[in-house]
Amino acid sequence: MEAQNFKVADRRNCLDLNHGLLVIKSLGRMHAMSHVLLERGSISRDDLGLNHLESDSYVSNRLIEGGVKQLAHVMENDWPSEWKTAAREIAKEAPIASEKIRKLFSDFPSDGLLVMNHGDCWTCNMMFKYSPYEKNKPIAVKFLDFQACHYNSYIFDVIHFIYRCIAPNIRRENINRLLEEYQSSLAETLTFFGLPEKAPTLEQVCNEAKRLNYLKFFLAFTSLPMSSADTNTAFYIDRLATNCDSKDVYSPEPFQANKFRLAADVDIRRWLKDGFFE
Image (cartoon, rainbow, N blue to C red; front, side, top):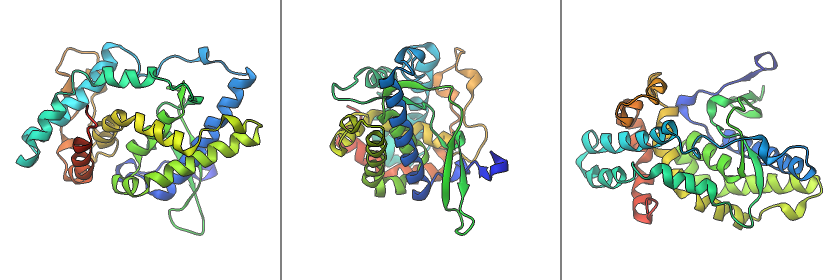
């Protein structure tokens, strides 16, 4: 890949709108083609297992619970005092977060579109090729590491990427455009392969995105600070299968950083107000 001038973007900086649009359009094409293969019988839903967030395992439960616990702990003890009430509200979610997230995977909508999801669509699992004429303008993307692939609604990859990888301020300003571009790419590809009636409308895509509000919370407030941390010891994977406090699977450092607190400020206030945690 490097010989073809592809490279991995710096995870610490989060992605800008150009990167986001390119990835979203590429996901639309990939998802559409996977649905075509499912329709033709070339691949089967039984080929793949559950996503790790969908699995009711000791490790998966600690992964989810620990992130929420560490976030609440740092908000309570290290953020300005105005955040203490919010910290207590978020702390209540720790023991029930994994169950709420699993339910999102099982609640496949009656009018949903089944596709193969990448399952771990974040910055370090993709490589970009850049324009030789314009600095930092991506012109192609390659997805890597397909170990977490699973079949479900297309929206899981979309939300995973947008809320874990794109800079929060850019995501907030452009969320409607990102969903529009995804729907357009998905519909165009399905139409090309003779399945225009299978394409979800923009309204359906937006409704699916809203359905995953709780997953947005987990990704934006636990996964994103880990993914964009300035330290290489943000997460201790070897502790997942141990009996230590689940919050200690996560380093507090990324949650303590002003970089994260200032970026998350708007979302936390709005999502508490709008009942994301209900």
